[in-house]
Length: 150
Image 1 (cartoon, rainbow, N blue to C red):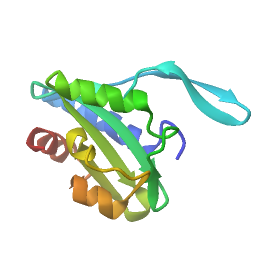
Image 2 (spheres, one colour):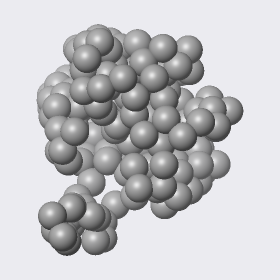
Image 3 (cartoon, helix red, strand yellow):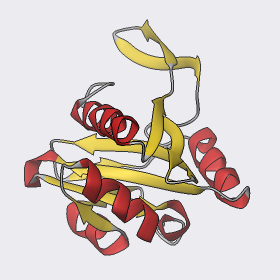
Image 4 (cartoon, rainbow, N blue to C red):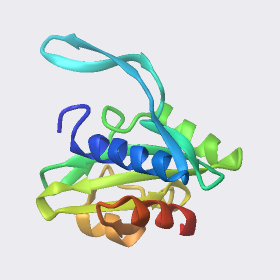
């Protein structure tokens, strides 16, 4: 799916609800994208999609989405820079998450990065994401309650 897709829009809407309710704040991290030979590449920017605080807990979120059966986890789709940041964020005391959206199945999963480290395949399916994390629905209260529990 193209950059800035439906999943990031969903998280941006959650961020507004979190801020308005006084429960937290999530900020979209900016990345400069360049077009080279008809393909889009990140030139510079943040290593993850969202950073913030939910009920006093620092959180980092990396979004991955697809309309097909699998999300690729190769270097070009999930870089070492992203992985290193998520790992360092947890070591520093925050909670780091991957959010996988499989639009074909209308399913979104919240996966704690430390749990994801046990996964060693080059792609992930809807079923595998469900085993690694928790399915979330599309409302703010459900989202931040899962972040606090996981």
